[in-house]
Image (cartoon, rainbow, N blue to C red; front, side, top):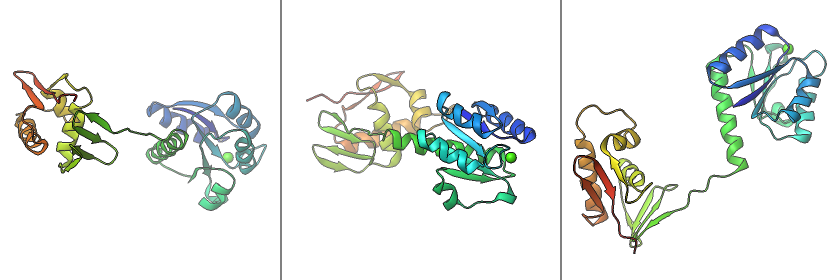
Amino acid sequence: MDILLVEDDPSVAASVIDGLENASMVVTHVSNGKDAISLAITSNPDLILLDLGLPDMDGQDVCRAIRETSLTPIIVLSARSEEIDRVLALEFGADDYMVKPFGMRELVARIRAVGRRANQTDSPVVVPTQIIGPVSIDRRTQRVLVNDVDVYLTPKEFDLLAYLATDPGAVHRRNDIMSEVWDTNWYGTTKTVDAHVAALRKKLGNQDWIEAVRGVGFRLGIPDS
Ligand code: CA
């Protein structure tokens, strides 16, 4: 993420830059309102961190000015002496605010949360239902139908089916299945996979739809029509 940091206190700026760079963010730093407004437009950052107490302008006016031309998310940074409430921050166009002193972990978490929300409003993620022959898989609602009849899967069974369905017909290695579905590096037995495959076959009502490929893993072999 590209962050525009607007902060006139050099020591606060240095620690924020340090913390954000450690979180793999790229920081452009300015220390007054005039530069903030021009860079908000010309450098098109992903998010703006805006100190309210600036030497040349009131941070609220900077925020309003940026909002006239840009929808870039803004998190306001305020000192205790200029403590604001969330309602006021939202009124002048900020997306969130943090009161100094704040911890870097919390700041990074807020930046990511605000960034995610902004992305969602820009382009809502539409996950279409995947249809493979008689099976339909809806990843948004975690619903599976076989011949238009609901099949009730456990969350892991659903994840396993959804993962195999990312590339129907391709062989998925056991270790990949373990790390994708169980989110872990698996050094022990892969019996868990076998047990879930067996349960899934039974619930789908067809033993042949999930084929074991000896010594490798499994592939989804649902016929297309
Ligand atoms: Ca300040």
